[in-house]
Length: 102
Image (tube, rainbow, N blue to C red):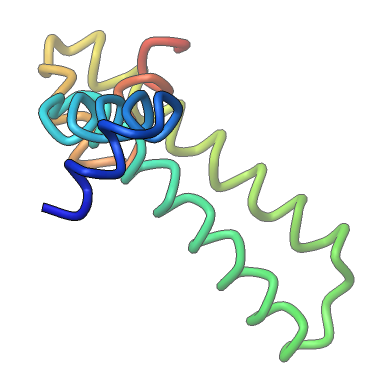
């Protein structure tokens, strides 16, 4: 009830509420968001582990880039074998958006 009252009174809040509902209704948008969030958490974890191991940030980024390239290579190979993008996304953790760029 409170959200309805606020959105009736404020056009910007109404637009935000509408975008929020569209986002939650679109499984592709949610998947892209979740993939991006997972990637960000993986990066933060990698940096934390590297600091514990005494690695420099540049070394960590190099390892992360190598890991990302390995995932991309696997995705390209799976695609050439005719595997569906949904299965490739689940197997590699890459988002549909990332797969579209390969």
